[in-house]
Image (cartoon, rainbow over all chains, first blue to last red; front, side, top):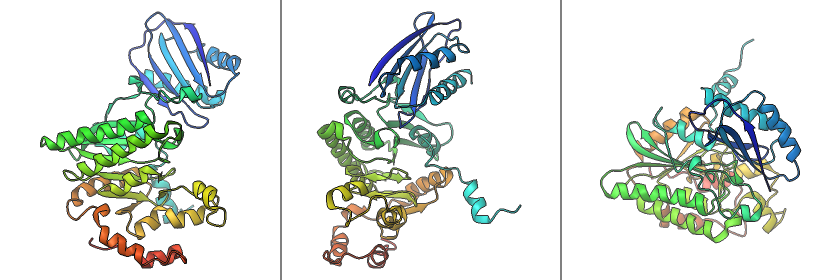
Length: 97
Length: 287
C-alpha cells in the first residue's frame, strides 16, 4: 500500500460532494468535495506500490480539463490508468449534473 | 429478426446483481426516499486494514439508508460484495448492528421501521477476526429481538452469496428472498475444498456448487421464502410483499422440532444427492 499526494491549480469553486466507485478488484472509489483553498488536492491510497509516476501522468491529463478547487480522495485497488481516468471523469460529470 | 421470448425477457431485466450496494439500497426503497446514514464522507473506515497494508473504503463496505417502503418508514443495510468480499469487520459490523438496534429502539417506542438486509458477504473479515465476529453476534441478537416487533427481510441476490456467520443472519431473518444466482451456506466452496479435500467438493465445479447451495436449491428445500429473478423491480416487489405477508408463523429458526426431524431423516454416512434432498426436504407449504 502506498499513499501519494498531488496539488493542481484551480479556478472554479466546487459546490457539492460527489462519491463514485467501489474499492473492488481493478476498481477504485473517488470522494470529491470542496477544498479549503483555491487549489485542487488529490490524496491517493493505492494497493499497488511503485506507480507514482503513472499516477502523476494520469492526474496531469485529467487536470488539463478539470479546474475545480476540489479535495479528491482516491482509494485504489489495482485499477488500470484507463479505469482511474473513467472514474475521475464520472466524478466530474456527477459534479456538473 | 425475431427474438425468442425467453431472450427478450432476459434482456428486459434490470439486473440487481450488477448494482453496487448503494444503488441496490436506492432501488429497493421507494423512489426518491433514499437518505444515507454514516455515509462515505463520514469516513468511518476500518482502523485495522491499513495496519495490514490494505486499502480502506470510505464506508467500510456497508451502506445504511433510511427511506420508505410503500410509504412506511424503512431502513436498508446493504453490503458491498465487491469490497473485501463483503466481509464484516469491526466498523461495517457496527453499522449493521447499529442500524438494527436503532430500528429495535424505534419499534419499542411504537414507531416500527421496516428493516431490510441486502446480504452479499463471505462472512467475517479475517483481518479483523474477533472484532468482526463480535459484531456479527450483535447482528444476530438484534435480528432476533427486532423480529418480535417487525418482520426482518433479507435478500441474497448474488454473485458473492452469503456465507459464514452472516449466513446465520440470513437464516434468522423473518423472510429470506433469493435469486437463482444466490448462494447460501455456512462454509464457502473453497473453504470446504481446502478443509475436506477435492473428493468432498471441487470448488471450480460451478454446477455442483449451485446444486448444493444455490438459491433454487435453498428455496426448494425450504431455507428461503421467495425465489425471484435477478431484476431490481422484482426484488423490490418481493421485499414489499414480504412485509405484507410475513406476519404469521414462527420464524424458521424457532421451528426446532421440524428442523431436527429433517436432520434425523438423513443418513450422514450416505448423504443424499441434491435432487434427492429436494424430495426429502420438500418445502413445508403453509408453514
